[in-house]
Length: 84
Image: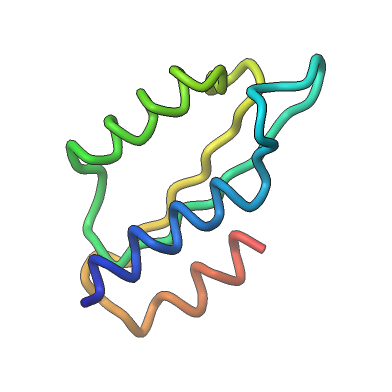
């Protein structure tokens, strides 16, 4: 259940700030990723790849900030505050 919530949050954050078309010149989009996992996984690279296919490139028009609680759900509130 937590994995589904984490993925749903990730997708919601990404899509809530992204327009229907790729990018607007000069605009930098910021995505915050909050997860109970311990670090990056293969699916994170798939997420990045899909964003590149849509025209969003880290360092060019996209900034992704990753926050992981290392399996400690009680740390999520602190990490959430850091993202905001």
